[in-house]
Image 1 (spheres, each protein chain N blue to C red):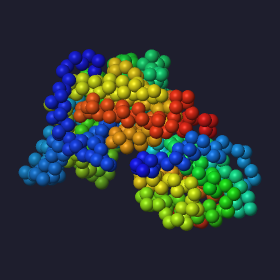
Image 2: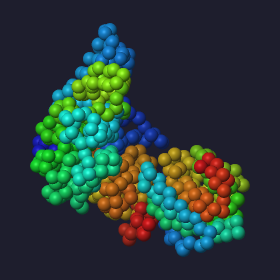
Image 3: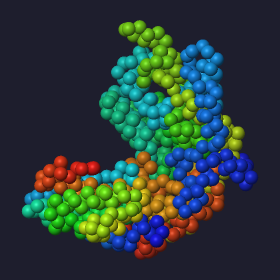
Image 4: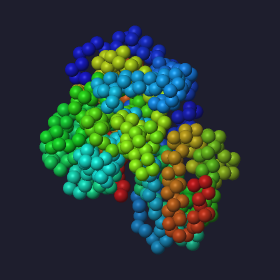
Length: 445
Length: 159
């Protein structure tokens, strides 16, 4: 990011990228062109990804990892080839990458495996994952609910205590609190690589270093980073990481869990059943090595294959170039928001260690209403709490509007967004003397 | 009129800017209170209703949300304060029907009964906003049940 001095996508390359995404050419109500600024919620899909899924069903569809016929071999090969592509995309080995239905499922998988270890499952090897009273799980105040609620639940079930790292006024994690909040009692440190609300990128090195000092496991939510930045999970040194396909140009229904091989080998299974076993008798079962141990039942094969195609697509563009392009979009988004009176950013206003996801509050106008006016101009943004209620509470707001870019976002689109945003307060008759219409807490409960 | 002007009619903007009935007042002997949240956007409303002799004697509320949700509670306040409970039920049913009309609106009689609430006709064209307009009505329905003055069976049709 900050160190990225690589070339950006040139104008013709960006045009070529956009031509790869069929949906970007459609129009909306009244024939307005679509300005899609909701990629942090879900990305659009390039034709190669759509083709990969279609091609799997048209040419290779069969049950994977079973059956000795040619189609089954080809299907298995496509499935495992995709695992290899996605693993290499994030700098890890294929044997360290577990397919999950989404990132939420990946994070829950780790939490439930620890629950099972806490119940004594997995034998002596799994004891390192067992939690009980006196142990602590540390999360952060800016987590997406997906990396908060599973840990609340795990704490409740095991008797462990949940603690958290705070957020500063810029929407960045209080790295300084690591020294006091993460202690010898900390067994898990779960944190996001980049906030889906503030766009702030975490100093992973500092988190990993502190976790290692106290012997805690690290769990990284990499949903927002993997689609937008060069990410090397092995180099980051985290123990586990979760990310989803649909935010990185792949279909819904597929995500991935990275776990250091040694940890996955020691971890007890969560979902049990077919395909994840070695020997089954009526009394007991032995389990397959990872990653299959964590992939019970029929997998989302076509989506995984398409996720492999998405990883290759991004790899070919080059993630440094993608990140450089998106840094320009982040700058333009911040400038656009800053140019409109009465609009306040929730998150860093500089582009250092920051994604092109900019959340903001329009004084006197509720986010839902802001989103509606933008929608009328063809601009698609996210409104609400973005599955991060504690973070919004931290900033004293119930909801924000978020504009987020991706590899296919253009400066021209940001200009359309800026013009529409500039008209919002006038539409609702809000003047600079703040007369709260809605969205301002007034002694509610 | 553009679809935005249909959605945000002046009546709605006026109610949103200066809402009626806002600010919870002390509870009487036959009070019911309900807190409703729209989990997708975090909008919320707390609505308190007093029932006396089969009528809504008083209604007050506190809330936070978009102009549609806040204006809707404000309009609801004007519409049902002093109204007999059976008429309130009928109004609630008609308002739901309006929200299901995809913007087509209701007949003239129903429109007259709903008064300012017909300004929400344009909302029904935006499925994501229908919940905003219904938030206060859901709170009213629940609060009335909590007063004990109305049977749940009579109020939960298409709840």
